Image (cartoon, rainbow over all chains, first blue to last red; front, top):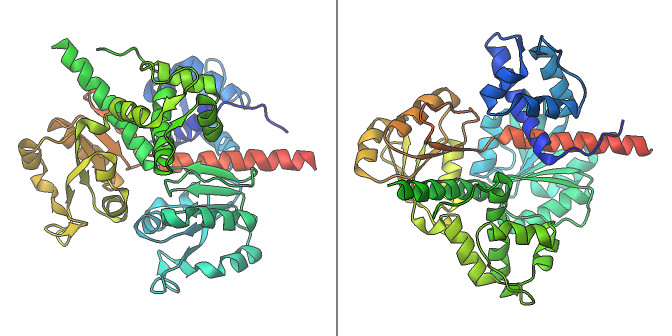
Length: 217
Length: 217
């Protein structure tokens, strides 16, 4: 079924809901009202009901949400059960950190392989994940179904690497290179993690708070 | 001057504008119209004008924006020139990656020091940044003005570390622990980078696209 276009603000709240529900389930909670959930997440109950109503009716008046059911629904919506295969390109410090600490498997994804240009890394493994020569990437992509490529390669090779994986049929790129990728194929999805945007946002709020504090003195 | 409350969507676009303007300046461009800038960033010219108008009048009808001036204005708004001091707590793979590759200095921040619990790391340096014993943190914070603490420590110590830096007067936390910090002090700002939220958002769009593709067949 083709879904109605849903605002990206709603989409970006879904993983937060799922994280909170996972926490609650872990702590043995089995149901929750929209007002309790809202209080925990700094959202209004009506916003929560509105967010979920984009996808169906998950709650019940007077009962609230069954946490297990809601987790399953959200997981489905987010594609967590689609068994997406992932490769990672660039096994420097950050790539290394993601392979060892992110826990792709725990989030429902399979990290198939990693690629690098550095001779000393090729043929080794991090946390059970083999590192292959970047030159073997097209061959690997021809032989394996890969849904998402994680780009943790250096900035200078970001564009060429992104273009390569896109030309080999990978449809989604998780981009850590701090470069805005300008892909010719509009069907390739790109999700950026711009560390600097996040730090500058924090810096904005810190500056704003300091200005307000100074005013109040 | 106390600023009007500005929506977080606007705030989060400011670092993106600054990045784009830095790119343009680097490529020798010295002025740009809101329509050109909009085309490059996937925004409408009126949205751009509206975003900037929250902070003042930076453009000129018929001329557009002077890129150098606009960069300076945005840098000021984002607190880039406030010389904020930063410490980083937890020098595992991710902390290591940030120290070596993020380039705090290039973004206008000073990374003063890093802290860890691991005896083998204490007393060493990464990229010129000294790593101190986490137990010396309160003393360090008493002696140095620290504005922002980067949390790259393990999940299990996230809450206690956050509470410690907050109690020592640090007013902003850049949180990479994938834990929602629940600080008792509402005056401490927290900016989260949740890697999993980002990957699940990408997974959502990939799933949505696949569903639409299947419909069209």
